[in-house]
Image 1 (cartoon, rainbow, N blue to C red):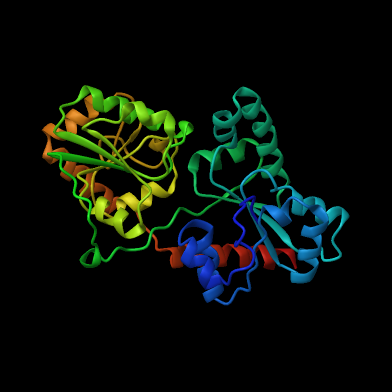
Image 2 (cartoon, rainbow, N blue to C red; image 1 turned 180 degrees about the horizontal axis):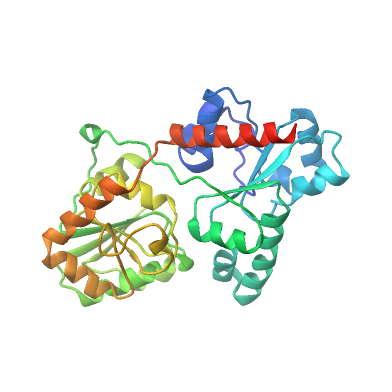
Length: 335
């Protein structure tokens, strides 16, 4: 259950849903269905309306309701208490982001305060919480909640089938993929490119954010939204991958690591996942870090080699199996 507003979310089959969203919850639900789980989805249209949600719950009779996102995560708990005839389900919250960070970007400090309060209510009132972040897991512990850790997944890549038209032209190419919202701190790597030689180039794929337009230059190149095939083509040419958000989890980490290239990131919460200077380079001074990587091919090799040998990666089918085992335990414990 999610606040996702896409019209097709509730109506398509598991296979169609996976074709449209082959990652995160989409990939988990698809693979759970292949393991024998019967799945259904409730998006914003249903989840925001307590009576509609209660009706869907009573019809489907779930064992598990997996909530994803912040705005409607408490609704199945309210439905179970006041509106549902079917009450024997566990509400499991999937906690991926620090909600205050996201809402501060959208609505300023009032958004941060509101969602910090909402986040604690969601985490402490849900029957169980799954998180892919050690930082969030530790945050939950402070509230007396033992959050179950399951990392992000990334399917193996058949590099022999990678093809596309875009060619990267730098002597060292840095690649950033995905969301570039302000809370992701993407502007910091864009600004850094003004302070390094022009033959070092940064390429960014993903949705256009106008606030970053002023950074566009010969060595800060916004490719915009590209197909998954073209994105793989861009990634295959990367010398360095960069993720600027102050997180120890996001889809970029596992997707980047599949390519066995050095990882450059923000020196903050990512230290909970990486060993700085050993299997990733984490920094608050991107120009300096970029030049270190540019001037030391040996450092780049060591970072990539150590990450490959030390950081486990799981396919989405393997991640779904971890969910399967955890959900089965929750159901068993409730009987």
